Length: 36
Image (cartoon, rainbow, N blue to C red; front, side, top):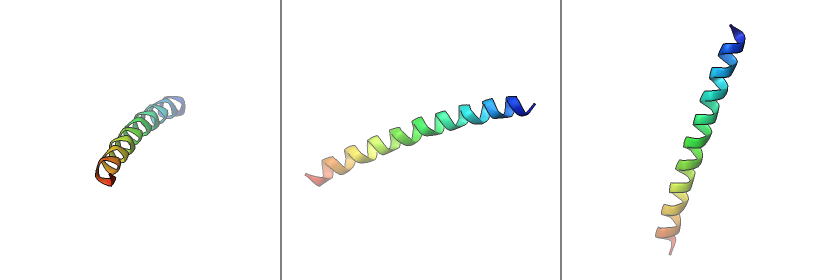
């Protein structure tokens, strides 16, 4: 049971990391555009 929960939490962590990186990339791009 705890093994399944661990696998699910790892999956969620990976998806969150990807989403966070995507948001950071878009935000960085916007900053570059408005910075120049």
